Length: 523
Image (cartoon, rainbow, N blue to C red; front, side, top):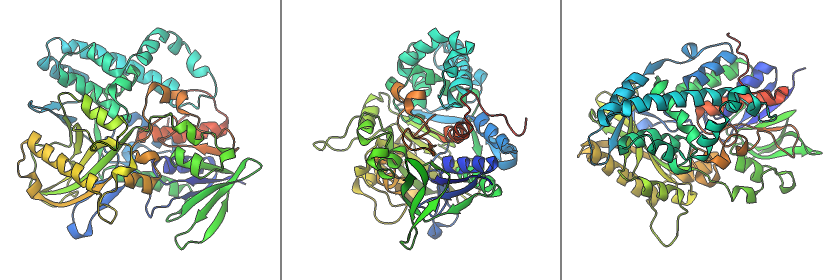
């Protein structure tokens, strides 16, 4: 008889893990407190403003090879599950006090852009991206698809022959590495900003993560029509096809154990009834801090509260979902607004807030406008904007208006400032007057809806001490049969990493300690 498994959380990692467990022959049930699957990769529609739709989480489709591999594990392909389109330009950068810069995909095209801004930078970029591609492949082959339960990841000749280079990249910051190659602040920011995708800041991110530039400038930026809601729908569809059952509107209040072995979870249903669900294994796709400190008793915690006190929680965010009357040709699908000196922006996000001074937030922000690419996400002659403002990972910043109730004054003030900034930098002076619908999400929403530690929006920062095997294990050290998946455990943050974390649970269950991805069902 197949074994049974309970998965806590129906976000990307939970759905992906459930689908793979179903393929392995497990009888799988996924439990989630919300009424819809997707977790942080959610979406929002507003009945009173028909025709608008927004993703409320991930929006950059990077690492297409990770998506393709995951789908092939399940006997399908990205092309069969998603309708992907190339974005041209990949994104637009709005440097402070300077003209916008359209960043293309492709090494040749990016090199031409860099050369036009800084003589000699085109050749330097080619070398930079060649190193980024090499680091990317080493990471994929040795350090992402692994449970770090053996030393084989580190003893392969591909790693040993690059030991000196890898050591330098790990002990040098991304900011220092980029600055040593390029002088123009715009080029430096284009190559350094991916640290934010890692929930970190450039001077605290190891230079090894320059591999991120390979994923956007080298591999290109795609967009799945339907947004990331279509990715979630595909994962849900594949899980259902493998017999996975779902219990939504159901809160997990604890992980049950007998003799330090997981036996299931205790739940509270929507009507308040408390039940115990039993299974042979439990996989928590919930925030690791919540799992360890709220779902387990103190004596069974591998990561007690005091360990989290020493960790960097990464970034928080205020998100705005805005519907605008009229077209906005000043913007493209992905847009980045940078302060000329962004050090104060990162200080505002990562320095501990103090009660004796006003809340400071970043003025380096991100704006997505899917209506530039896709028909149907906004009414005719309207645009839908998703605006991300990095903030401290601090739930006291408050909640937004997207899920009912009034937004906190701090969230509203941050939203107002972001709209004013976009209007000024992009040359849209009447932007505020053209907004016909506006909803916000704050760190308090992340804490309440997703049990996110300190209200963080992405997951713990990818500093040196929080990367690879130092990030933690995907298995409990004290409870047999309890596994972890998702952005708060290995290999890290982002949708591709969540897919890989699901695969690493399967490797752990199989006792597979090898580095590298599992064989695909479609060769």
